[in-house]
Image 1 (spheres, rainbow, N blue to C red):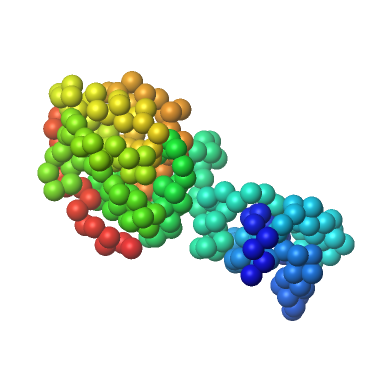
Image 2 (cartoon, rainbow, N blue to C red):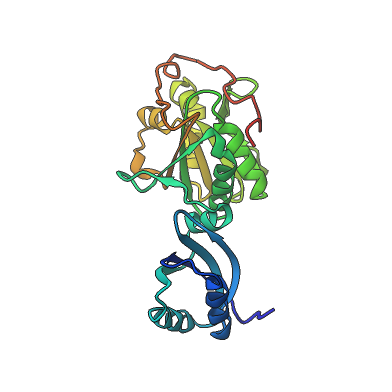
Length: 267
């Protein structure tokens, strides 16, 4: 229905007076202006988020102008949807973002389903994306990456890993060079590796225009001469909000414990 309405936007408004019929009035006004609602949900305290479609951005500007005469709501955002916006509408809450660094997103183990959706949205973006995931052993880093790949219908490849056994790949098959793949790197394993062939492969893939996910990015940059500024997203995954992420165990040479073998236990 309405194929000409192909401009997608995210809209968020604050509810000033949650009177009966308010949502119906807002929906009717949008419909009368030629704006379709794809998804709508409450987000945070007294806020509502919508993914809408229209054929002209001016119609949304007109809605914003008209809403100024409605005392019951206050428009907060109208913009092209971001990953965080889509997740807020889907799950009814915003994912946590660090105040000191806007590229850092924080999750707990009980939010692993939201994390999987977050990763899947990123994995579906085109071109180079470098994602770092911090977290203690067995918190669910690897299972989240794999589940996000499945959700995004992407093939995943471990370049270094402690899953099943310690893996340090030094070459790829011809068919594995695919910009639609998700390349997974264990920063602790790669940093401790003595194989120059493995490190050369990592450097090659780091410049390859595809999705790369690095577990333990803080260790990775120590041994591979990259910086945290090179990362597009940093994800922190904890058992609970108060858990401290430390690296003493990971810094031991050739350490591996099959840390994420409890696959999908939290999904």
